[in-house]
Structure formats: structure tokens, C-alpha cells
Image (cartoon, rainbow, N blue to C red):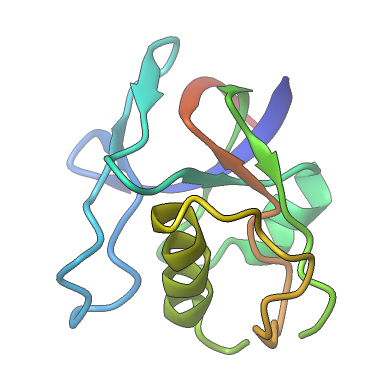
Amino acid sequence: MIAYKVVRLDTAKYLSSQTSHYDTERQVVEYKVNEWVQAPEGTRLFCFATLAEARSFKSSTYDRVFKCKIKGHIKYYPSSFCYEIQKYWNQVNDFLKKKKKLPMDIGVSLSKHYPSLLAKEVMLLEKV
């Protein structure tokens, strides 16, 4: 399936990152163009269903948007509006660890488009 991934460029590497400097649980993931990357154990790689969602999420730090292929994804569209992606990430992963189906709204209040596709594997194709 085609999706979109927002990453940051750090010394010639495309990276996802911790959601804050205090986030010690989340692992940084390195992406390479045209190579499959697997999600760390117990989590998924957050992607976007549309280019518009990805562009809405990007910031001055996470400023690279890539078209990508994804495998093993779960669709997740929160129905409400969080200022904290950390809270979103923690709640999603709590459900994944318990091997429970994600509810459509897990009580996270989102301030902008947050990742709607949670993938087991991602391959960056091209920068858009």
C-alpha cells in the first residue's frame, strides 16, 4: 500500500525520533530510500494515508515528507482533536502490547492530523 512518512534529516540520515527529550521508551528509527525498515518490537511505524495529512503534520524539525510503501498496517483515525503526540503514541502502543483491537477513538484529543496508518514495515520511495 502507498502511504506517506514524515521524517527528519540528521547528518545525512532520515530518522523518526523520540517524541520529546524526556521520552526514553521510544526508539529512533533510521530509514533508507528503497529499503524495508521494520518497526521496533511492540510498536508500529506511524504513517499517513494522504499527502495532505503528512504535510499538516510536518514541522521545522520533521520537514521531509516521503511517499512510501507499507506492509502490515492498521488503519486508525482518531475522531477527536491532542497537543501531545507522546500521549497518542503511548495509548496506541498500550493497546498493541495488550494485543487488543484499537478503538476508533481512544480518548486522545488531536490538534492536527496525526498518523492514521500504523505499519509493521515501511520503505521510503521518494521525497515529495
